[in-house]
Length: 183
Image (cartoon, rainbow, N blue to C red; front, side, top):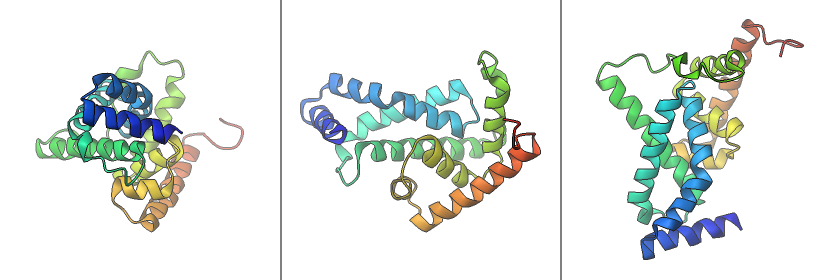
């Protein structure tokens, strides 16, 4: 039913140029997209908000290209994925800081900062593809087939990234005191 509602809203945006319909899509997907970026950026709230805003701007300007070959959420995550990697490429081209660095300055107000930052740090130890797959699968509950569509990777490659990423996360967390009974 949710997919039908999304298709109805997309149709209203494309055919009727309804900004109210697009606002409903933004409200529905804003939190998951921001959370996706929070995990990819190591908890940088401001950057995540900027990337989410860029995602919705691109989605709005390109919504007519949505062909309903997958769910709207899969299409939107693909847009978000592209926005993130455009950001990464631009940052590398301008000689910015290492992509994997964690900037914890923006998170001092969060209640469980230590544990949350350990999770973000552990995610930063992963390669970009592993981090993307782990974030989509475990934190956004996206299926392997949909991750393959979003990233353009074969499903077997997604599974490999998930397996290696999970191993690396477990190793990192164990080395940092998150063993049995420590969590």
